[in-house]
Length: 289
Ligand code: GUN
Image (cartoon, rainbow, N blue to C red; front, top):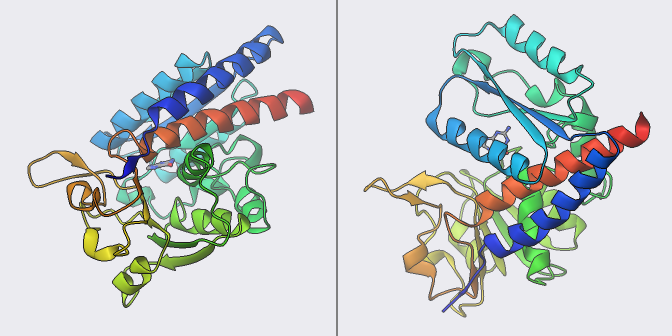
C-alpha cells in the first residue's frame, strides 16, 4: 500500500507560520492584500478563487475578487490590471486563468509587476528560477512550489533521481522542470508529442502528471518494482461526474510507493504557495517602502 501524501497536515503547519508572519506585518501597519481578477463565470475558476480568498483571510490577510464581465474589452481588461498593479495598498495580484477566448492571447504575466507577481508568471521571476533560484529570491509558480514543499516536507530528496513530468505548460511543467533540475534531479519533460511515454515513466523514480486528462496514468506507466513516487496535478471529472486527477488512483495505489490524492493533494499545496508568495511580496514591499 502506498504512502498517501496528503496536503492537510503540511498546510496546517505552514499556515500557522504564515498567520504569525501576517500578524507581525499587521502590527507594523501592513495588512497583506491580495487582489484577484476574475473574468467571466467559468465554474472551476469561481470555485478556485473563492477557495483562495478563504485561505488568505484564514491567515489574516485581505483578499478581494474583482469580477469582470466575460465580454470585457481588451482595453478595459488591461487598464484594470494596471490600476490594481499601481494600487499601493495591494501587495499581490493575479488574473485567474483560463481567460475567455477573446483575451486568451494576452500574456498576463507581463502586465503584473514582478514584485507583486504572486503567480510567478513574470519573466523576471521565471528567469530567476531558470538561473538556479528555488524561491530564495523569486516568486515561484504556485503549483511547482507546492510540489517541492510537499517533497521536502516528506524528506524526499530528489538529488540524482529521475523525474518524468508529463505536461509542458508555463504554469506547471516548465517551471517545475527547472526547480527540480536546480535541486539536482534529472528531469524528462514529456508532452503530447512524446514517443514511448510509458518507457520514460516506467524508468522514472518520480512521475508527475500534469496532463489534464482524467485517470490517464495507470499502473502500466509505472515501474514494476512499485517504488515510483506519483504526484498528481490533475483536476478533472470522471464519467460519473466525480472529481479525479490525471492518475487512475485505484489502479496505481498498490503499485507505487507514494501518491498524492485528488482532492486533498497538490491543489491545496498550490493555495498554500499563493499565501506564502503573498506574505513574501508584502514583506519585501514593506522593506522597500
Ligand atoms: N488556473 C489554474 N491554475 C492557475 C494558477 O496557478 N494561476 C492562475 N492565475 N490561474 C490558474
